[in-house]
Amino acid sequence: MPFEEHKLHEYLFRLLFSISIIVIFYLSCIPVNASLPNQEEFILINDIHSGMKGVGKTVFEGTKIEEFGVEVIDIIHGSGITYPYILVKLSGDRIENNGGISAGMSGSPVYFNGKLAGAISHAWELSEHNLCLITPIDIMLTLLDYIGEGNQNVSFNPIVNNEKKNINFHYIQSPLIINGFYGRADSLIKEKLKKYGITVIQNISGYHDIKPELEIGTEIKKVQPGSAIGVQLSTGDINIMGIGTATYCQDKYVLALGHPFMHRGDVSYLLTSVYIYHSFPSIVMPFKIGSPFLLLGEVIQDRNAGILAKLNKFPSIVSCKISVSDLDRNLENNAGVKVVPEKEIVESVVPALLIQTVDNTINRIGQGTGDIKLGFRNADTGDVLNYNNIFYSENDIAVEISRDLNNIFDLLYYNFYEKIDLNEIVINVSIKKNINKAHIKKVILNTENHFPGDEVEAEIIVTPFRQPDEKRTVQIKLPENIAPGNAVLTVRGGLSKEIIGEQSISQEEERYLLNGWDEIEKHLKEKEKNNQIIVEIILFNDDNSSDSKIRSGKDNSENNLKVILETDFVIDGYHEIFLDIKNRNIGEAE
Image (cartoon, rainbow, N blue to C red):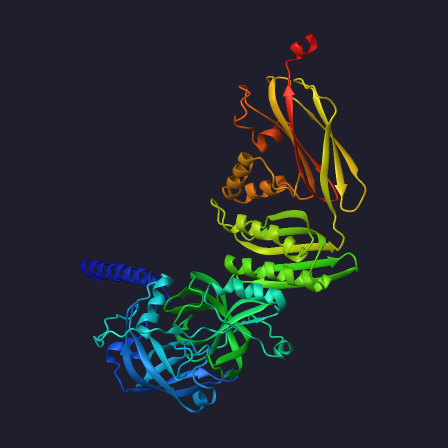
């Protein structure tokens, strides 16, 4: 081969190789799941008009997807509405037999000319139940923008009737089925969830008998438009699930509802498939009831246009185990729940389950003394934070014993400096009916004269509930280098709220500004407990003025001016004695 021809072949090879590398690099930069929605699948609101007839899809019973008739009445919008809706009338034997649109049909896809128009989403209560609104698919597809993987929504530039119509409708709330709560715990959880606009559907008898279990399978059952889906918030002894319908499926993503579930934005809920038992007629609005039978993935967006879920991706669940012992009757009760990692749900479900477990164990509502031990595991580090306290109540020990749980949730979930995620909560409670309460009756000092370097000895008389008085003795050494002047000795029970004002304010500020997990753990170890007697000497500044700034409790602890006595009682009461610390030389001369 001539030299020039060889050079030409080498040049062409290098050119083709370079082009190949560029093409491969370009293709590698395209996300594998970034396939765009095929706009030919959809009919946009611009092309929809009155009189058009189509079909909708949903599950009325079991898992079978069935069709029903849909006829367009008009395209409407009004004051307070950010985008138009399609007003339609539904028809068909299933719709008529069930009394109209059912809560749980939210997300049911509607098709005209074989193309997806949107999802059934809104209706009017106490009106004709076969009239409803459709959220346009144009709007629902915008949820894909939150994936951040190059997905693009269909352009939305609707042409609608210019006539403004003031309308007042509500989205078809996904019926929230709560299984496992009853009595006052049921009322408590409903009150907590009410602020999210969720309607709770009463369970029917026999729901417990099915005992559905969430299972993560190696193969995910195919979700189709019209499939019944569940938004699961908890499972175990407490099952909380909202029922809806899948609207559109694209690769590993599912759009559903056509309206918000709890309107929380970026979220982490469980997505499940649902078996529908029946659609029940109702004067207000018919509703579906069902049960989850397979875990599908994670709901990752909860916004105005609906929810977005990702298949085969599962949230980190918060596991909670509760054990309650009745010491009087030697009985023990256990409960467990797995909750989605949303702080609002954890803070709602866990305290309600604790109260219910206490009620079940002692089988009454009333007085008692309870010892509670709490453990919280950090999902990121695996570290465990432990805390215990003692409570008493003359009226309701179950509610009283849950107070620290709520406070610790505040510290962990609303920490100013660090985002803290939990994956395990362990609660152990022991309760007896007798009230182990004591009151600080009197404080007696060993002497009236006090000098720098002296030990202040105090005898504390404690009166337990319906028992003889008991005595406790404590000594606190005054610093050698303190200046003569005024000081105050305070003796208080851990249950007492009568803490000196400035000190109380500083403690409250520190509570919300603790710097992450380590400081919270330290704070809880140092936190005063209800069964403690806290004895403290507070020194005023050298000018001896009565309005001088006092030392903080932390300073007093470091300088050994604070002593804590542990007892078997919940301690109440507050005493203070003013001390006149004299100059030793002057005192001895006198």
